[in-house]
Image: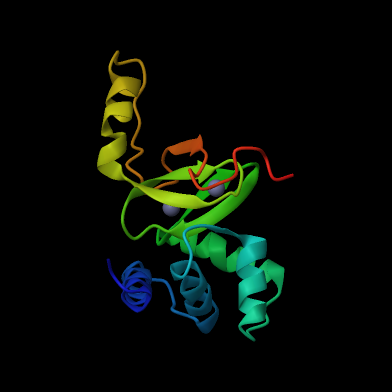
Length: 149
Ligand SMILES: [Zn+2]
Ligand SMILES: [Zn+2]
């Protein structure tokens, strides 16, 4: 497992390699994302504010869109909300329906799904987990057996 600092450094160098500028706002957003799996723009905004780095929500949206365009961040819609995570290692996701926890699912674990989806030749996909990839919904085994709310 790489440390958060290593992941941030790798994202910043990928950003520069793609011709993007490593602004302080981009660095701050990458730092927040490296400390989580996936966060919505509102959650990124709340964490920046909690860290004493006030940024307005529209700036956060703009930074996330730029980082997504460059490919260092990918977007996964979860429960109707767009969430953002570092795309440093291609991966897919599992989502707990009860608590919303997002976990990374290794690319290899989804290979059979991709193979089945394309087997009859009527559909192709370049989904390799670099983009949002595949989302598997379920429940954490530690979550209560009945919905909490
Ligand atoms: Zn992800
Ligand atoms: Zn859960």
